[in-house]
Amino acid sequence: MKAIGQYLPDLLQRVEALRAQGATQTPKKPSAEDSPAFDCPLCRDEGIIFYPERNLAVECKCQERKRVQRMLKSSNISEEFVHKTFDTFDVQSVDVRVAEAYKLVKEYSDTLVARVKKGQGLQGVPWLGILGKSGSGKTHLSTAAVVPLIELGVQPVFFNWVSGFTEWMAYYNIPDEAYKVDEIRKRLYNCEILIVDDVCKESQKDTWVKEFYGIVDFRYRKGLPIIYTSEYFEDLIGFLSEATAGRLFEKSRSAKTGKKYIGQMFLGAEEDPLLLNYRFKDLV
Image (cartoon, rainbow, N blue to C red):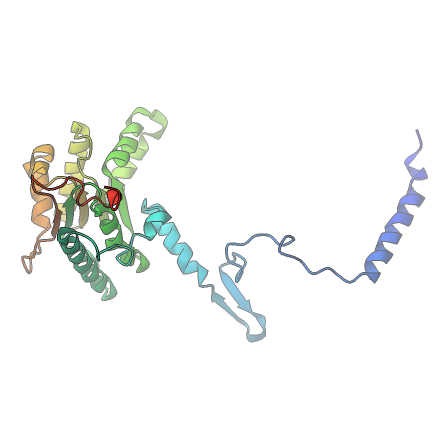
């Protein structure tokens, strides 16, 4: 085996040759392939844009978008639902009941937006019920109602009756994660505005109903608003109890004006059961 010293002269010659070659070559401009991928090319994900010649640093406009994205994630609202706005809701070719519900929800949302802009907050505002057949647009409307509030810094929490309670109750049986039961409860009790989607959908388990009463009663006493959707109206009294349903319906009326904020999109006994279901539009 040769000693390492025998290789040194040759290695040094190669290094010097490479240096000489580099000195005579024009530096290659970095290409898109050479550059790392950034979500924001303006600030290169730093969040701040620097102007050395003016001795100035300003927040990049991407930060507002990222704040909204973080709030959506924290609110349990997927980015897909950001597109469920009033502008994307079809009100031109829908049944009059759906159009009236749209009008009511838009009025409710505009009222809350105006309060937030005035710095009044949401405590004490009426609640909102969006009730009707499957596919009538309840989830779209409930999401559309809060998206403008998110843009103003309000952080709602979206809670789906089936998936939310299924996940919540599962923590009861996981010793290392049992603390999450209280964490979820506190979040639902205290958030600025709570959206409960599909109340009593598929299941009315006693544990779910009892927890929901706790949520409703706490927010009822604290004046914290709830937006709720359901395929039921009067049936909610039997499914939930008079105490829970009564609080929902009572709070869905303005204490100042007496206006009722409950949109109803139900069918008569003789009507086509798919009439209000947008998922079957133009298919049947």
